Length: 140
Image (cartoon, rainbow, N blue to C red; front, side):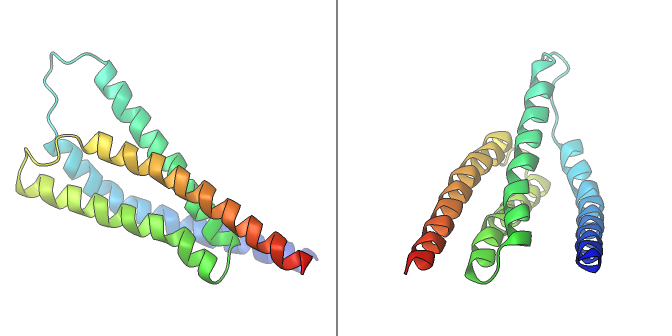
């Protein structure tokens, strides 16, 4: 049992280190994108609060599929990965469009916040469906 706990800790540490490295690579891309986003100096501080809120919501919403991906297997794991793939494609599209044209995606915060909310609905539905299917299999 102790070996099993050590293996889980090692898996967690390896996943955390991979996530950290990916995050470091993405942070430079985000930094370049945020440098290209200009907010006039006469904008109130609440604009920055909203940006922080949207990014925090995005991170918390992305944690659900990551946790499900670690615990689920088979088709359910693919179901958990699909929102993250959609997010990666969408963020790539936003970054590419912003690099090509500064006026593209003026509501990028709303787009990311919308993904967060849709992801929450999707993950709750997936968790409920998984639990229902597992419960019905257990009864028969």
